[in-house]
Length: 209
Image 1 (cartoon, rainbow, N blue to C red):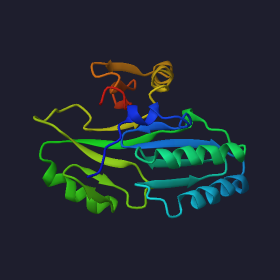
Image 2: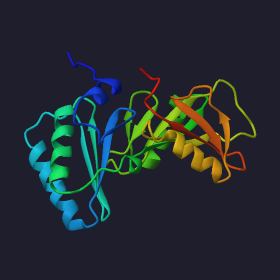
Image 3: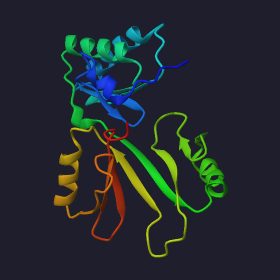
Image 4: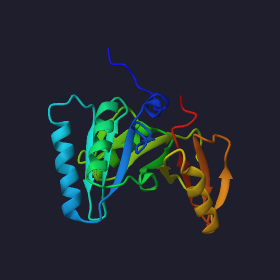
């Protein structure tokens, strides 16, 4: 039987200070400043992960840095990647990790999800979620709506951020002209809106366990 590792258990481990929980994964961003340095880190991660029984591994290489996502169970691999990054002098930047989902309010999800699956070319996970098979685009989920709400947007972004970065992200959004719609479910999520009422949620793992 698969033993579930909670976000709290992951963060209690030694050597994972570079990593942050974002929904079902943990992510770390390492600033490299060049493709060559980033490629060196990716090559080392490939060596460390080769033959390992990791549950999930996603690597995004850009000029400025490398973002790595793992399952919360892969504590040992996270520790080894952080050690390798330190050896290569590529510091972690927790403020640079996030996970974005697009969420659609739906009255009958089973009737609308096939359309979005075909349109996006995504894989279906469960009854109400779609994921990019190439792991490039944001996730797409449905939120149950009991009655139609005319005049209100039915699609919004869910932005998962590190638990220790949520307040700064919210403050920046408010300073940029946004407003707080609700903090009733904080720290799981806060609902914000722009000046025209378009909503988005800032979410963390805290409070979900």
